[in-house]
Image 1: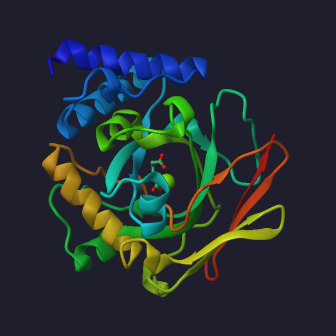
Image 2: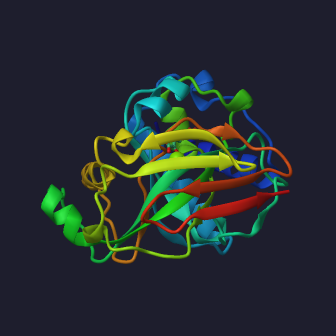
Length: 260
Ligand code: OOG
Ligand code: MG
């Protein structure tokens, strides 16, 4: 598609985010939208956010577990961009105002300690991830009914990124078995979904490797200091007012949010 058309799509999505109003999936009108067009639209959308005073702080991986691929009926890992103003502090209140049909999901986050400009090996991924912590991601599609027809739709919509919450403590990944952590997401004190971290591509570090591959393919790199969300290990839960959501992971500090 032409650059001007992609700009128009980015501004539609931007408007939908600002007004918290759902729109038709883009592919309904533009069935030929490619994955490459979609990543360019995502980039233009993020540029619009930056013009309004926000800042990039990292990346989120999506569809990295079987549970999420099945829930969304899509089958390939994708990335979105994390923005500074969408981080909610741990144990703070999160207002549903400004969201459309938000859901929450359990994740692990990594902190990247140096620029990554190529495709990482497992050994390199271990070296560049200087910290890991428990995270909750709020996803909120800008499309009607939280449904899309295709990967290009969800990629253009910054992979349904809404907000994210990190636990207050980063732990060195070298101290723990990253593929054997039990992630328990509790809603109002009761376990809603639970899975091993191995649900995320066998080991969540594979998600960072997959991100490095996708970034090379789309002419981008992973800057030092970035935060990377590895993708949900389980299905997401619809968020409702007054919920208290918590992710408990042995060996990591828990992360919690109060919904209002
Ligand atoms: C797509 C984003 C997926 C994850 O962790 O798998 C995602 C969606 O669920 O709308 O964030
Ligand atoms: Mg996610």
